[in-house]
Each structure stands twice: as structure tokens, then as C-alpha cells.
Amino acid sequence: MKRNPSATLVATCITAAATVLAASPAIAQSTEEMVKSALSAAPAEIAADATVMDGSGNVLREGTNGYTCFPDDPRPGNSPMCLDSGWMAWADAWMNRKPVTLPQQISFAYMLQGDAPTSNTDPFATEPTADNEWLEEIGPHLMVLVPDLKMLEGFTSDPDYGGPYVMWRGTEFAHLMIPVGEMH
Image 1 (cartoon, one colour):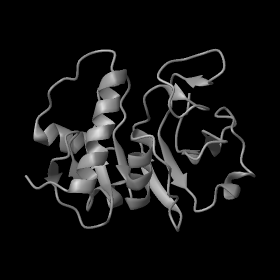
Image 2 (cartoon, rainbow, N blue to C red):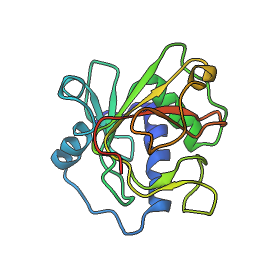
Image 3 (spheres, rainbow, N blue to C red):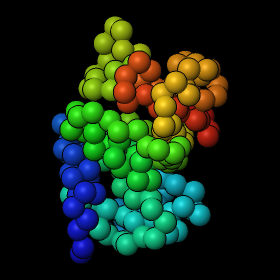
Image 4 (tube, helix red, strand yellow):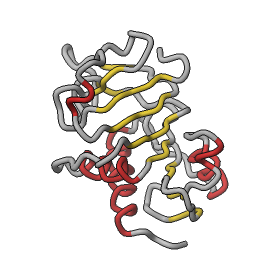
């Protein structure tokens, strides 16, 4: 299997953080199962030509469209994801707690299977607190990064609004969540 150094770092960080958050040990998956899980995160048109990597940074399948898909991680819930290059850079910054360089253009990520429980206000929260708006269930969604966080000012932060909302408002990791099915 081929390795992509920058994607390997992001994948390793995603896996390391997910392992810390895991409520139970990860179940070993075959390459075929991991690819199937990863590709379920995006629309068929995106998944068809996406690169697939495992949590250790191994390229399981080469792609050609600039998206990288990862299988479900060991956290509760089913949370495979497909990220474009802007999101890959964002994920690296988030996982390594370093400054974010926002993309120069709008950037997309898909999580059509939903996501693991997380805070709506604190990008680094690992459990619910009285003030971090913990979301137990996050349904299928598209995530959008913008080149200027001011572009998010007209959107609510309320995940129960029924439409797009800003997650992690007031942080450099703020992004737009667009529900594409039942949210919670």
C-alpha cells in the first residue's frame, strides 16, 4: 500500500483522537469493509473517484478527484467522512491544536452517515458539560469551510433550527453544518 505523508499525519491524528474518545475497543475490519465504510460518507459521484485511507494513513484505494475518505472510527456512532484538501488541512490543524489556515475557496466535507457525539461550542470537548451544548446525535450532513469566518455571521448556531447552522462559532474552527436528513 502507498502512503501519502501529509494525509498520513491527518489520518494518524484522527485515529489517535478517536481512540482516546472511544468507549469500547475498535473492531478489526477488512480492507473491503473499511473501503465500503469510508465511501458511505459521500454521494456516489464523489465516492466513485475518492482516495480511501485507513486510520493509520495507509492508502487503501487511490483516487483522482481530490477527496480523501476515512472509514468509521472507534467512537460511538457511525462517522465515516470524506474531506477535500481544505478540510484535510483543517483536520490537521484541529487534531494538532495548531492555527488554522482557512481555504482560499469554499471547501466541502461529507458525513452522510452522521457523526459521533460532540460539542456544538467547544472543538476540543471530549464529554458533555453544563455549557458546551453536547450533541448526542448528529445525523447526515455536509460541512462547509469558508475563506472568511465573517461569511458565517448570518447563520444561527442552533442545531435544532432545521437548516444550516454554525458549529464551533467564535473559534477558528467554526464551520457550517448543513443537515441532509434527520439531525436529532
